[in-house]
Image (tube, rainbow, N blue to C red; front, top):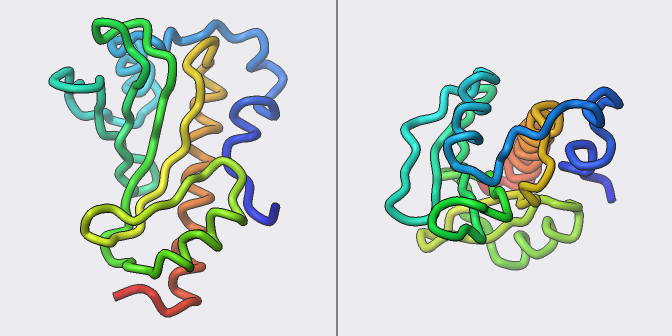
Length: 155
């Protein structure tokens, strides 16, 4: 596929990632601490629903949600994503884009704005893998934004 996202985060992360200790991303507080320590400036952890927060990377804001949790702990998946508030493409364009991205999933939110996310298992996730995941999301979002500009979909 012409666009890749987080394959590097899961398998192609630096070799030393294999020896790094997992950050305990299945626990909301441990993930929040790791995000803070990595410089992503997470907002307060929201436990009113699925454990979630918002981070900033490269001037982009991403929501971070843990899923498959038992009593707000022992979470099984981590989802990171965002929305382009100025891009309202057709569903056909979104479907075509979904074919060209490996792990990035695109959809239209209830305001018909372009939304995107990546979801990975929390088990064994290390800091280098989490960094590679966010970096891959930044790169894919930049490509997606450029594709929207090229298609004249930006308001």
